Image 1 (cartoon, chains in turn brown, orange):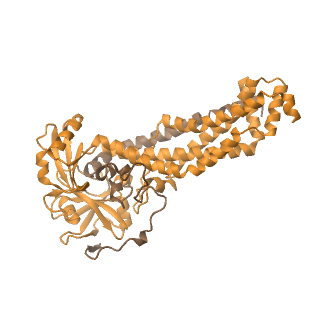
Image 2 (cartoon, chains in turn green, brown; image 1 turned 180 degrees about the horizontal axis):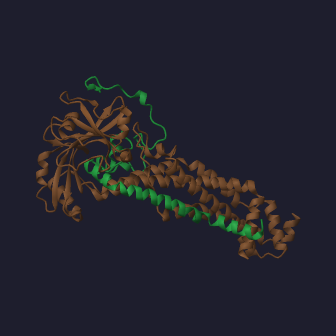
Image 3 (tube, chains in turn green, orange; image 1 turned 30 degrees about the vertical axis):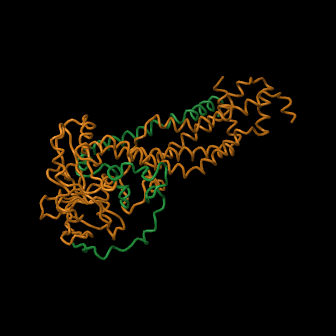
Length: 112
Length: 391
């Protein structure tokens, strides 16, 4: 490889962050455009839902709808205090220790 | 001249492959982790923002003992004559724990008039909208929930409830899986069914949704509502953006906090770089000086060496971070940021990061790395070449 080739290769490596961005930007643009086509559907379903919060952690009410139930949920117990709820953790709590449904609850089997 | 120095720098990096790979590997990991967390956080925030615009301008809740409580229907009449208020809707919704799911589902009651949901308008994957009325007992559920319960349109589900009058609901449609982020745990039914399932007393609602004819007057109307309903919690739609920033930003902070040991390892590598040059590199600089290179040319060569490693690693890190989140679906990182749940929304994420954030990630890693190489190189370049070669 000649010195000129090595120099151009080196220049390409130095500029590689700039080189890698356009393909990523193109992919991101295509995905955003596809999402934009879904916007009417999102609007239609959002009008029926109580909140725009995402259905991420259905196990904890203050996380399912953080904006409505606990507007200060990010710091409910104190600024920067550890998160008392189970979300935001890589490991789930042991679900097998959860109690069986209360005896007073009415439960019906699913029919087909 | 600079191009020839650049070529020299690349050959120098190639001569010290092992060191370049160690430093570059650490940088790739750090950039990929930082970028992935930012990509995922911004994407989730943007998803919440997409739905925010369609929501009512103000939500009013009643507080009892500092906790949200049920609000009476007649409270709505106190708000209807406020100028700019177009409609006040009492909403019925809440949560039910499903033992078979080991998690909560969100039961949402629909009251008339409601925007239609259909396969044609892209909301439903199959089936139709629920029929309104007390005797319909129909529901639409999220695709993920339907899949988990093994339900198809026509099936019936009896939800656990303390109200013996609550009916089993017939599934008439499922939401499209691309809307999973909003509907994964949702059971949409008639308001009367939701009221029965949630055991809400008649005349009471979960909260009030206020729609304004002029959303710019939100702040004024919110203040008036507070005066008319003392103790009520008034949530403005515009402020929800801040809540989304806080909640997702906090999660990102926790993940990055957990990554501190890895980033510390990277700093140790950088410290190795900053603490001085090896004997081979010193000898190389001395030879360069002896054959006529100036101090600035030596510094340029060393700066280019750092830039070659740093820039390549940054580019690769950005690429890996993007691929991790948007092409592979964020395996490993998604539970940490999204939270655990039985019902995981499977909808693909949409990129929402901007160029400024990418530049910040790149410069925060590459900048210090490049600058750290200058000081030891300058020290070596300013010493006598003969003395260096003798030692």
